[in-house]
Length: 232
Image 1 (cartoon, rainbow, N blue to C red):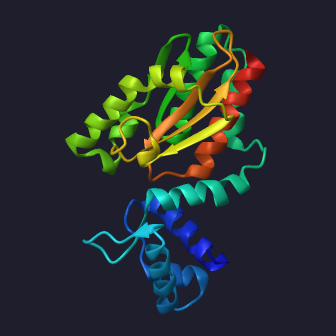
Image 2 (tube, rainbow, N blue to C red; image 1 turned 180 degrees about the vertical axis):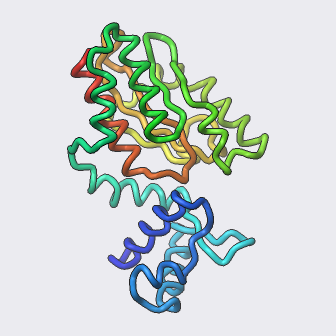
């Protein structure tokens, strides 16, 4: 992928996360100070490679799971520098002095919900604590009954799957069909492993639409896991 194609893919993903409508060439042409024809040519190449698609009802493009995966692996992760912005400081403040481990973990999840507007989740012992369902189902992607059923199926089976699979990376991202359950729900699971009094393989994270601000969410989830280890 050329540097300009990377920039265009990144711009499509980030713009689509904000506005939830397909991104057109004219908007990108202004952003990159090139002609619309140039952008259309690059978009056609990205579509041929499978990173974006053109919904039949629109002239704009939306990312595919493959496009999101490339973005997460090659663009978002490159900018995950350890830094405490306002959101990270708010999370740290909420966790300090939480008292009991269960309360600290619940506070971390509730804060992630407030900051990311996704569903938040964490393992507490052998249970899965979930908060923010209304956030998830308020997203325009989840107005169909079939997708809601797929999300519910994923959540019903997530805790036993985490216990069995024990994802070992400090931060793991499962995009769309990569999810082990509810593959057609169009959601992404971002989880951080952390050590707690309950287990060396406790998890905290968020579940949101594939259309989300991955860089921000990944940074916050990673910070939540690291901070929980420190306060617990």
